Length: 215
Image (cartoon, rainbow, N blue to C red; front, side):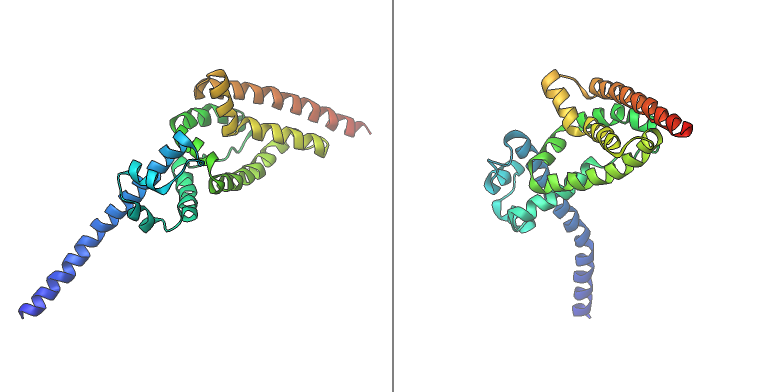
């Protein structure tokens, strides 16, 4: 009887403790990844080391390796974690939404600056950004067709390329680092540039359409 009761208590304790252990494990994992964000933002990938990361995170080197067995495993998981932290805004469905996107995106980049900069520094982070870039490219090509569908393919390609560049975090970085613009100011500047570009595309697109009708 006592043996059965003891076994039941042990099983209940195991069930009870498991969520706690899971939370602690997740907290430790987050601690390591956050420390990696800070380390990359401070020193880049060149001076990266597991012992230095462990020291910054306040855990042992063995603990880091328990969660991330190799450097590649750590960086791959880091890229995925960054994507979750940064998130992705709803893709614009109209020209107006596209034009004003920077006014919300760039201030958001300010809030996540260490994460954004860290993502540029790892191969896995850059690969993750490339996937996002291709997804945005398809969406923005569709939106721009409203003002560029009659233009030659090379002109459409140039217009799309400029839009993609203007709305990138690299543009946010350049305006911040080289011109001391916060995200709110740079977002408005890029929105103005996009309106100017879109107006030109629309004018030339309509001109081509009229010419085609008179033939």
